[in-house]
Amino acid sequence: MSDDIDALLYNTSTNNSLTRMSTKLLDKYKNNRSKTVMIMNHFKKRKELLSKGLEMIKVYKFTPDNKTTLSKGEDFTIKPKQGLTNFLRNKVNAKNENTHGSIWVNRKMVAPRPFTFMGKKVRGFVPVETEKDLNETHKRAKFLMRALERHPDIKIKFVAITPNRGGGIFF
Image (cartoon, rainbow, N blue to C red; front, side, top):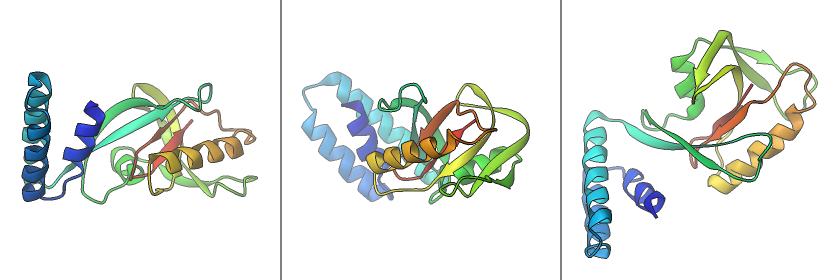
């Protein structure tokens, strides 16, 4: 239920739409004090982010062992219209390398030394393109994982995806 409230409030693009959406949610949950407090806290966070020109995205992750279950990873604050791949490029110095032998995966991003992302130490990632919703992005990531499993020098640790900003397969 809180994911629905998060999605509704964090997907607003202006202060006016944020105010309208939070008013609708407050009317809906007016008898539930915990939901009301949560809506007001999310409203304050989102209003602060909008004033700074930033957005918050929810990142979901899954492992190669459990491909069907998405677990909520972390929340990241990014610039508007910025995908997860560009967010990582700004945080980590990485270079493009071709993935020889895989026809479905064109490139991978490899860092000169391992870095920590979402609590795990990784060497690099393969970008997952943005799809229309979280289920489509999840299907695309699983498809790319199957293609990468045959690649000799890539051992997949986890996959991080977002509903509308793409994601990455981390190795």
